Image 1 (cartoon, one colour):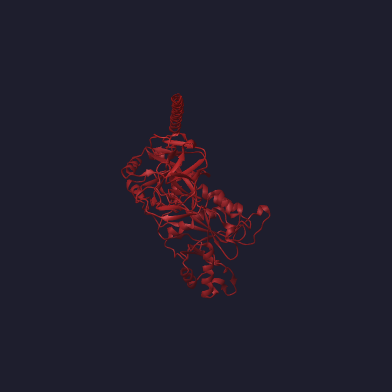
Image 2 (cartoon, one colour; image 1 turned 90 degrees about the vertical axis):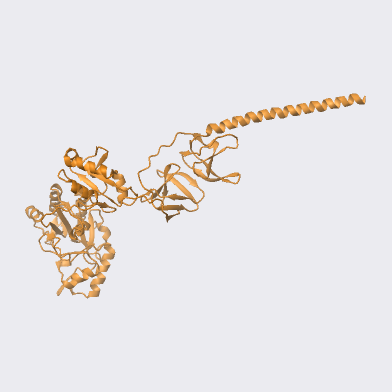
Length: 529
């Protein structure tokens, strides 16, 4: 009996063992199938490039993956090359970083084709503090919950731009960031760019001179930059490689591999000074069919073109007030000018190829630093009274902007706010701060103490932020006044005189033509011719 019971127990135990082994075998097979399926799923998500709408970014801390950032908007990310061999490979390493993406968050994608501009990195790094936010087209793309460092690739008024993950991202200048000097490159950058303007590229390229000049560009390794890249360089927002050149003409085109751009589409007004362009100084050379190889070589070297000729003279015109008699306005001053006459004069200048100088250009010409176009004039306006400002009739600025011509206002800075005269077409220089009064014993500037004059001139300089030029009130001056103007640092001073200015003039007694109410067009043309 006992023997039979033992046999039964053993049978039961064997049955249980077989059941357990069968169950374990089945579970093992199921796990193997699940692992195989999971591995195939992980592999199906992996690619050299992946896309994702929004997801977490992970950092690896020992054997744990912790969230350290987020993808906010759709983007394409490069991954490090790796072979997915086990189901433990569920976090994909973002290329050349210590960051990871979870496999279910990504979808295989094609490479994000990005064309990087031909710029040179700045020798400055950005260090973000606490949080890092990367934007594209004004939209937040990704955030990192930690500090990061980037090399500045280029910038504009609002953002720094960096190369990261084979893309370009913007970091707003309003972010909590620090800019640090760092030697990122020793590559030679363009400190100056020859800007060449061609009247007629179709005619020029067929001439022997034109063919010689194209050969020179090739021999010396010059490359053309786009107008937009030049503008960014001009404002100091990018660094360009050395041997950059900008070619301008009346219309866009290509001569061999060199691109020409229409200067009319530029936001910058180029000065035809036949000298090289630098940051914040938009000079240009004029290339004609008669330009020699030697002159062209001088342009490429960034040297001024000096053409021997008789001493050049410039008509400096002096206006005061503007009024519109057609609107019932009147002016009892002899130096008032009707707006219809002023516009007629501006039309004549524009239609007959006259170049209206900025005060910077006139000063540089007077000091022999640059050449200026043969048909150049300098328009000046004294005081800041009737019709000259946006608060007192606003006749001057709209007409200058309408014809895109330039003038200089000598403002009595203590009498009217300088903000009433702001315009890209109007320079503002000093006409004293509060010394524009005629006393019985003479002009206020000439009968005041040295201390009073110096203090007044310095107050005016503080408002205009310029020492380029000064205008004597009432055209009244003496040797003491000239010394005082020199002492505070003015580089030029203007008087009256009714004759043209030349480089041989005393730089503190520059003559001007007062423009009186009764001037005729014949008289005007005679002045400037």
